Length: 219
Image 1 (spheres, rainbow, N blue to C red):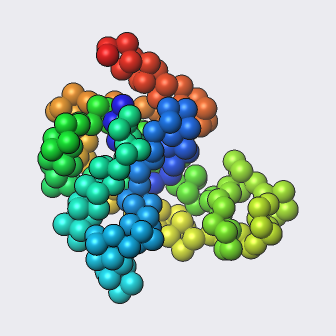
Image 2: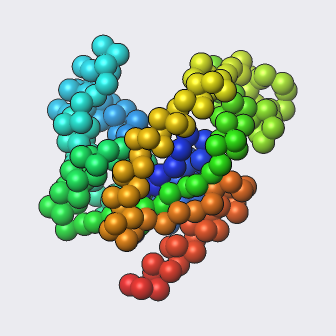
């Protein structure tokens, strides 16, 4: 099954993506991972993206779309995939439709995680990241064994600059403003499914699992 997962910052997309990838043996394809993989592989598009990233500039839509095209043609996507972080605009969504149409594929379901803003702010503002290895923790939900020390490598745990309450609130506001048209786009296609993402990871995944089971029953 070809899936797209959406949701505001802190909704839990990453956690659900890990479970979906492992349970259904399909690749989790995120924009950031695509950039890193393409740059590492030194593909034409990856090298072009690197020019913008190295200068601290945003990668243009045209480059990102071409990168998605390359990634979705990889052998590991034959039995399905999970897209995360793309598309972000109607133009990108339309480009994605065209890319998939060219290879005889389509997005089967769009999973949108719905979480109240108050919960999102608590989740993100309480997040801590290891300065050395990048492992993530939370001051309430995932405490390290030793305060402010990473369990994995012993590195210092820090709060990202954009994880403070004021910045988080603005990020959430911007997300809703920019993605609402995209949600409508997929809702009009009849493939958008809203899921309550306010509960525990396992609880949210039960909703995802039901979607997958229902889809398989229709095939």
